[in-house]
Length: 236
Ligand SMILES: NS(=O)(=O)/N=C1/NCCO1
Ligand SMILES: [Zn+2]
Image (tube, rainbow, N blue to C red):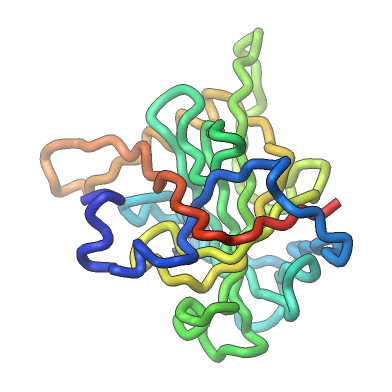
């Protein structure tokens, strides 16, 4: 079952660095020491796209540092492992992080791991500085005309907004096992998608073919968790 009962199997769900959180911009602290982030995705090699029962995931080959995120709050390069989305049933709910209590229609997570300090993704996923997840909000544009461009493949490069200004804080995976191993980097500027594009996610089913009732995959987002005194820093 969903987020309210996760703590029974994963007591860390009630830990001190859980994600997502509500980001209140005027309560974040601007840190001039926070440099820009760099995304080297041009050599990224996607392997597959799957419906893993609770999201749509695109996985990447990660044998070397061919596609990494650098800089910002990170002390090492982190390798791109996969990206996936969280979205709602309809309207503008669906993101995991919220901004001053407001949620977006969806949120894209680009998941990276610290291959300098750890040998495998699995090992990194349990270490406090093991993962870096880049969060990008998807804002719904209700087009005046029906004509919007479709989107074929997700090259992460083409999914980035114009500004890489971000908020960053220490948090966790937002899905079980909820490991407190994520350095979160959330971009301030959303990307704009159409209802049609978002509708494609909603068509994905939670259930496999074999099950008879067809449960629609939607609302696969965890609500904001207690900040527990954490500081959220802001790049310029
Ligand atoms: N929503 S999230 O925190 O990115 N969760 C996961 N789980 C596996 C990789 O990223
Ligand atoms: Zn996610």
